[in-house]
Length: 141
Image 1: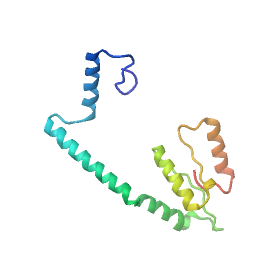
Image 2: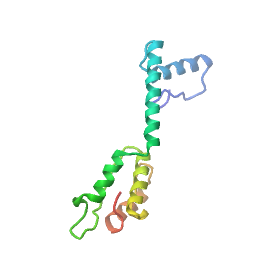
Image 3: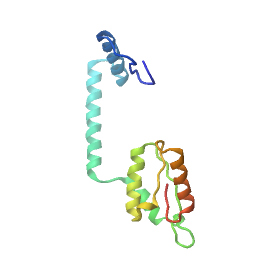
Image 4: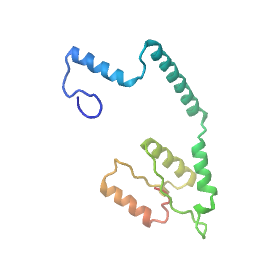
C-alpha cells in the first residue's frame, strides 16, 4: 500500500483487490453488524438532508456575524474611520474562496481581498504579502 490511505501501488489480483476493498470498507464504518450499518446509513442520510436544507436556506449565521463585525465593530476602524487590515485563517480552501467572494462583495472592492493558500508558490506568496503590507486598498488576506 502507498501513502497514508490503503492505496495499491501496483495492479492487484482479484483476491488482493477484494482484500483491499474490505480494508477500505472496514475503515469507512464503525458498524459491526448489518443493523448497525443500516442505522449508520439512516443517520448519514438524515445528515445529508439537513446539510441540503442549510445550503438551500441561503442563511449562514457565521457569515452574518463576520459581516456584522467587519461593518459595525468600532475596533475594525482606525481614528480616521478607515477600515483596519485583517488576516483571516481558514482550514479549508473552499471556505477561503467562499469568504473571499463574500467579503469582496461586502466591500464592493474585489482587489481589497488577497488570498494565500498552500497551493500558492513562494514568489506569489511574497507578492501577496507585500500587497497586504503596502497597498492601502488591500484590507484582508
